Length: 509
Image 1 (tube, rainbow, N blue to C red):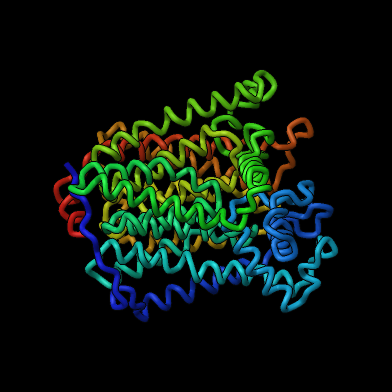
Image 2 (cartoon, rainbow, N blue to C red):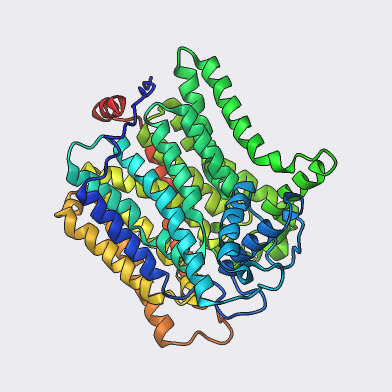
């Protein structure tokens, strides 16, 4: 039976930032600012523009309209489709924008405003959220590892802050995923250091910011349930968890408290954040349904309701094994593995998936890489390959956003930095048979060669007129294959009980 983590007190001293950590944070900040100098989603593409205009529009409507209208106002032009915490953050930045220049958020009149000063303000808002949420959460997780060497702390923090995928999407394409992921990261750190109530609040906030955090909900619930099951005061802990979760949700719904409009407001909120009518997947995405559709024509052969049931069933089936392993052995290793496996199951098989949703599985895979990298476990190389495939899968989106230069530069720097500091760690052979090892190596080489060939072809050969999306589809099919492998690998890891040495380390943590 896995031990319940002993609470680890977080003190000012334990969160003190050394000169090395300060240097890492400074470089990470400058990289983000540099990426923001390039293009963004929907730049100069009326009438809807893109994600930056959507976020700016939400500043506009939350500042000018009462909460009862937030989820009803003009659904044809970027209607608000995220939970209330996103709306509250938009309100704060909307108020600041109105104070600086009212024309930036003038109701209806500001649509499509691409004033360079406004774009700079929007970019700055993401940087501020990064510094206030994601950076501290990353440091909290690094401290939770209780690493003995300062250099290991710096390495771990640098790996988390420098992952290209999140930087390119939030600071390039333009979104605020870092808030949801930062809150989830803090929740993981608190879960594994014996602070379940803090963890529950942090994860509830993540859910209240973006509904995609539901990708993590099952492992979080199972891990906390396992802690209740093993605790001498399990029933009391279970009730306490229920109370703090309910209170967090109730606090966010309080602005919609008017009895006369509450049912309609809540119904519209649910309708907006779960847009089932949009279909099985959005655009071209590296999941199973999109990869199979060119051959099986799923959306033509099946009704929407049937596709919804198919995706629900396959997602549950793909999630169950790692959840069972997590409940049996609730350790840091199995928690991270289950978070990765279940979020990959949701990405690969669930309904209405976006290409950017791969950032959710990226988080626990990145944490697995960090844990294995500082422990000098060569398995970290597997996670690095998966994260490279993840960033590659978002290339079609990033290319449209004029983020080609940051894409190639960040990938080169991130991989170069990892391998330069690894001192040949990947050369150590995994504990697998010779044939399995050889097949794995050949598959890795083949995947990189295929990715390079796709990039080269895109820049040199026009796709056939009959198949204008040939290269995009090739990208998604290749990436999907890597993600299926990653799901299998993390599922197996979640089913494996920790070794005695790992148990001892995690008990001390």
